[in-house]
Each structure stands twice: as structure tokens, then as C-alpha cells.
Image 1 (cartoon, helix red, strand yellow):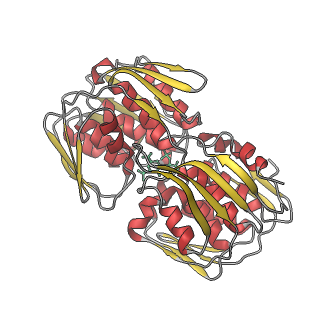
Image 2: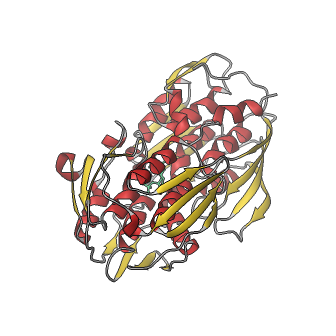
Length: 426
Ligand code: SPQ
């Protein structure tokens, strides 16, 4: 598609759609708890629809109404052996968390996904789940989809995560809930804690001290009413757009401000962005607030260490931000980017270079020299939603035409992205 270019400024207000990570988990926890769970502001993105479809195949009744999702759960025991393969589409969260649930179920299931899922590593989940007692296999010695699982009785595990990953942590928590005894998981760095918050919201108990998480098996979870906050990873595209497009002023309403996800806010502030939290509700089960971003002069920075898991999905748009800041920005310790929907180090660097950015890939991140004047060209999302949206924001800075291939990938996490973008144009 031809992208919008040559714009003057972005001004106005948008309400950010539901958080993808929390939407997935609301369906999963609604399905494994007892009773009727109601979910409002559920994200109807392709990934979350894949989660709904998988749980329906496992026998869960899920009703999609106009503004509400209703899930009729019957505990882990209410899940039945599926007659068909479970297709997770493009969603890493669906497949990895689902494996944790299925590991404890006494039946056979098989999981497939699209071409991108077929390249993403699964041993990080299959190995510890096999250690707990599940029988798993897959292509290339159990590394890749299709994955087959024969679940059953699970032993608890004491496991030090080799990578900082909320998906691996969550899969092991979900398996731990079905094991006989106490499962202990140690994180190398803190990652998003939506699974832990969900357990508490559904009446369960989970402990977290420093980076050690303990959960007891055999807990009975009860249905809950969930209001999904807006996705800060979606808001990030407009936060950056507001910060780099002269004359912009945007209010972003209903943004999830869970501290395990707010690395982008810290980076924007450190780079000199004019960003304000104008309304904040930190009492709800997931903190939420409204943000005001205005254009300002920015400077380069270093992004590394424990900050990386708190902004991992925002790195593509942070790379664009850095192209407009004065000086150098260095992103390191971000090798996990290589195993996302695409190798996000390579796709970000290659696509931004096509538009004239000064950016180089490193082993574990990238180095960006700032204040580049971006120009037109033909770019591709490579089927990665976050790359597609980053390029659509980059195009706004170009005076020449920018054509985006594979733009449909954006519907994975932000189906009304272009409608929101157009509403801010003057
Ligand atoms: O679900 P999926 O495909 O893995 O989506 C991504 C994304 O950009 O939307 C990553 F590619 O988000 C992950 C995130 O990177 C969602 C997630 C979660 O909901 O638990 C955790 C992160 O992945 P990981 O591997 O670091 O645990």
C-alpha cells in the first residue's frame, strides 16, 4: 500500500486498543477457571482471535458480543482432546502459553502456526515441560512446529530461565498450576508480569520475591471480570510519532502502565521527549493512564541490560526514534530480537536503510546515528506487524512516496492502526 507522506503534524486524541498480552491471558484464564468470565476491551487482533479459536477447539464455549467477551470455563479438567490441530497463526504467545496448559492435560494435541512461527524456537518451552513429565515432540528434534503434546501428571520444577522471557515463564507457571507441589522459576531479568497478576485476579496465589516466582499446583481458579487496558506497545507508535514530527501534540487515552512494560516511557524521557502522564489509575489490577506527547528536540542514548525486556517489542519504533535524535543511540543485550516474528535486528536495519537512515546491526542490537533526513522507497513489513507500523510512521517524515509491502500484517496487533493515524492528520 502507498503510505501517507509529507504531513505537517499529528494532532488530536486516540484511545489505545486493548493489550495483546493481557487479551490472550484473559481467554486462557477464563478457560481454565470455573464460571463465567467477562472481558471488556478485548483486542480483536488476529493473534488474540487465534487464541479464541484454539480454546474453542479444546471445548470451551466463548461468546463474542459487541463490547464483551464471555468465556465459560470448567477448570483445567474442562478442556477436551481436540479433534483438529490447533492453529496459532502468527502468535508466539498463544503457542508457548498453550503448551504449558496442555502439558498437564491427559490427552494428545498438536500445534501448528504460520511460516514465521515455524522459524521460532520452541525448545525453550518443550525442554522444561518435558522435565516436568509431559511428552512433546516437533520438527528438528522437538525444536520447531508442528509440535505434538501428550500431557499428563506433572512434577513441579525448580527452573532457572536461560533467557528473560515472559512466554517461557508463563508456560511454566501454567504447567506449575497443574503439578503436584511447588514450582519455582528464577528469571534472569524481570519480564512482563501479566500472568502473575491474572492468577491473583482469578483468586489464585503466586509469590514473587526478587526474581524468584513460586506457585503451588492444584489451585482452583474462579471466573473474573476483566477490563483490558490499552496496549503500551501499540501506543508506542504514536508516542514516537508525536515526539519526532514537528508541531505534533497527541493525547493517548487508556494506556496500560504496568511497570514491567514502561521502558519506552523511560527511554523517551531520557532522550528529552515532552511526555506527560496526565491521568493515572494505579489501583486497578493492571495500572492504566492517559499520556500527552508533544514534539521536541531529542538526543541519543544507550539502551541495555534489565531495561531490554521492559521494551523488547518497542525496539523497532525506538530505532526510528533514534534516527531523529541528535547523536548516537546504542541498543545492546537485545539478541532476543532475532527470534521474534522476524529477525527484528535485520528487518529494522535493512528497511530503515532503504529510507535513508544511518543504522548498523550489531551482534546483540544496533547502532543508530541521528538526525537523518528520511526519503521515499519501497519497504516491507516481512509479515511482522511491528515492522509494518514502524515503517508507516517513518513514511510520515518523507517528502517522497513510500510503498509498504505486506501491510496486512498490522492486523495481528492493531487492526485499526491506519484509522487512528488518519484521525490525527490535519
Ligand atoms: O506473541 P508474539 O508473537 O511472541 O508477540 C510479540 C510481539 O511483538 O507482539 C513478540 F514477537 O510479543 C511478545 C513479547 O516479545 C509477547 C509476550 C507475552 O505476551 O508474554 C512476551 C514477549 O515475548 P518473550 O519471548 O520475550 O517472552
